[in-house]
Length: 478
Image 1 (cartoon, one colour):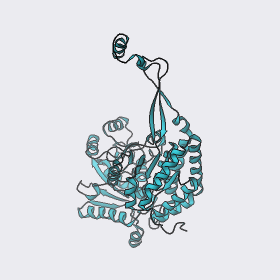
Image 2 (tube, rainbow, N blue to C red):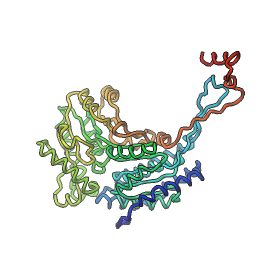
Image 3 (cartoon, rainbow, N blue to C red):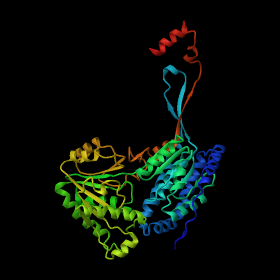
Image 4 (cartoon, rainbow, N blue to C red):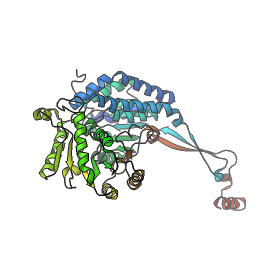
């Protein structure tokens, strides 16, 4: 049964600024200490754990069919592991760090204190609407901030679930939720927040950054792009094909770090295509009605993906459906787009123009590794890079010549859930990083403090610069 069958009206734009002021006033009145932060995170974890069935139902309803197991892993596990990692390390992260003051400032003591910023805004996307809301939120709470969350309008039932969950855990002056469509999102991004954390497309990220710039609001942008997978000459196909298929077809490819295209040696292209056919057949023997295969989020996204395939066929490209629905009308009605390959498209094809964000994998062949590297480097820096190889020298050559947001070697996706690794893009794929300590630092201010003690030399540096003052200056610049 759908626990959220209707969507309430969005937050009035006129209410956004007053809500922010309420959050900020409460933060100035009582900044969360270690005990409060820890208690908040523990209660958030427990509340989400108790409502996992409700969460999966809301997600399933919003997607029109979403794999329960993918929701449990992609939404639940990622939040729990991040909170657990924060709780384990938070006290140490909060400690001031001693820094060297240098002999010229003797006997001063220097330190860096990591202090909260105030109110952090979080704009979450629709593809993982729980984890990509709650992981940044938990990070902001860990850093001692209050949070103003704007979930996606494309997942209304999940948004209402989040609103209910957060109201259960936090008072409204510590965590608030704004809802609504594009106009509300634009107004939200233009608020004078102390930091703005955005996850979404590169195109929208540019607009968010422009809106934030009017207030000089610092931003963390977690964007996307066309992430490549590079298959080496000696990579064992039987092993890599399952990992590649998971990376691409998990959540029906609606994942910012999904492999967008795969570069494969010319001599191994047909081997890869056949291996993917067999892998998909094992995973989805009857894709019609499969509860293990997620649907496309809405009609607009489904039509966009279909347009890519129509354009590819019109250009005479080979398009291979790896699983064919028996009932085409039902598949259309359910927005079920089967795993599909497009072979050797040129840059003029629509599918090469922007991130695919769906269960379509582009396959392109290359002559040698330097050819593959040149192809990647001729484009925007990717959010993720995947390399399958047993040749360590080959992997090192690739890593030394490509800049990406994050890398997996002989794996896909799972660098995201390694909590001690920073996650973030570079250039068109993002700005800033979070997860673990890096997230704590991103949503804190590293505030330098110099404590002067005793009788420092600086007491002697004052006009008239003669005698002892002259000798002290000469000593300091020597």
